[in-house]
Image 1 (cartoon, helix red, strand yellow):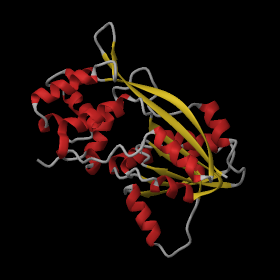
Image 2 (cartoon, rainbow, N blue to C red):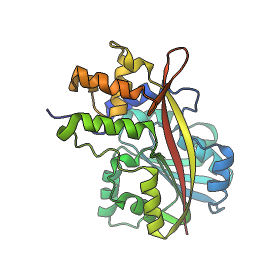
Image 3 (cartoon, rainbow, N blue to C red):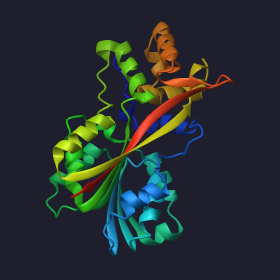
Image 4 (cartoon, rainbow, N blue to C red):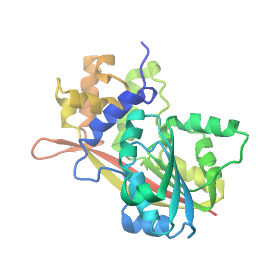
Length: 293
């Protein structure tokens, strides 16, 4: 049996991610560290000049990118923005968010491609190499391998005093724990390299790099996964597809293993059960804000 890994199917990825977003519980819709933290760790660090170059890797539908660009426009007059996102559906939503000050002061180049495709295209170009003052990689480095090369490459792309904003799963996240159980359950069939990095791995790479300073801001997202336990719930099936990163997950795994995994999903390792019976999954994630010396 050949498994279909979610990251290889951008349309289904986007559909399942939207299913997940719709079930965020008592938390912001995007992975935002807030105005004050972003101001002190990003905006105040960036050079105060006429314009900045920004790059978004796996920007999705762009809500957080737009929030952060609005914050950076308090320091500069214009932003030249480059977006790298494999999902056409997500790009179309992102484009729809540009209005008012953003549409007047932000110029965007759109690339419907993966990070690896973007890197390959840049490296094959014979023109001058563009660098960036701000790079955002929000929950997108899981798809780039874990050898450290993608982190090093993004640091290479930064201007001096530039900032790289990474959102990544904490080592204690329910996502990491559940994903590991899924991999165990499939055994040799499962060769998905999606979970390329966690916070500890990124920090280890940064400590060895020597070109940067960084801060780690701990956060938590809560996701209502109750629908995953409803046998005929299409919404629950989409959420499970995202949590496992397998397309049509329920149809690829035996019933007894599915039940075992669902038992683990609602265990204290991953979730808590509220008094009304809802099952709330804990996604512990960190923002790593990196400044190039």
